[in-house]
Length: 395
Image 1: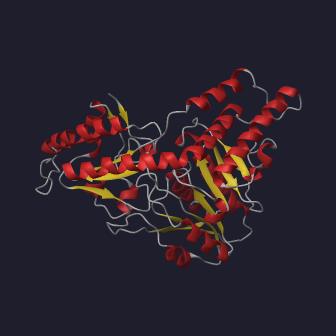
Image 2: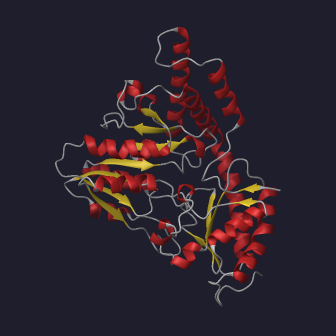
Image 3: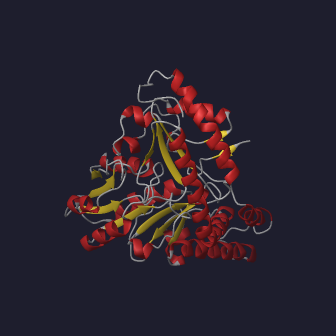
């Protein structure tokens, strides 16, 4: 049996999404920018998808910009908002645990003279990974042009107090961007309640295709486009629209919105059973992150005395696929920047695994993982040079 527990990295495409996309490859293949009938049919499909994505986050369809994914959406939001500001000196606020699509973009801004503040997060074992909104308020300056804070962390699953941060930014007259790639389709999203001016999502995180995402741009928010070449997406993202991909994200958003309440309850129950049983059976196992303020599908666990890469390979051989951190950081020899910022030691950060569930996850798969994981941890601990007296054998 093979058990996939890495849904935060990517998800399988829902069959209904595939069916909708196939028609765009074979029947409705027109260019959405053309004025003839095939082009207008493609335009109608794009417009319908835009409405579905907008409904997922309670936005207006005119506020949705389609992109190639979450990374491009983050880049467009951050570079675009900073470039649009008329302030001569510019300052950006983000957090130490944001995704590299945000952090690397901020580092690029720094190389061009923009000052960036990287806020810390809680290191308390009971609330790891949560940013303090008061830290955002204290970091604001007259030259601050953007606050960018992720909604749900991709490694811990922790949900930030985005609505409060949004209010702080709005009161200061500062543009607010939220990377919601890991929360879209998992928890209800309302851009008005969150107070976001810009918000990023990616289709392949909620059973849609890879290579397509969206950026919400609140009416009146100015961004400078990153690309040049045409008037698509209301002059904010030129280029021929990826009609099959856009139809795919539209259908995935529709399904996610309808299925979210049922999915959330079932998946969180399975997640909790996996987490609780592993902590009971494996001595020294600990849950990382705030157990209450998190998305329903994610569990990050430290197994002291066992190396993460060794656990990952051994579990894969047993048919269980999980992760040691962000998929885009695969191959890195450094421990997770998220776990270090949340207060874990280097050894504990290197001894942690992320289990993330999805809509297709079954109780049988969780039972299989529960049966396989403890023995793997025991074997890895027995041969690991980092094994300590605290890392006693599995019970």
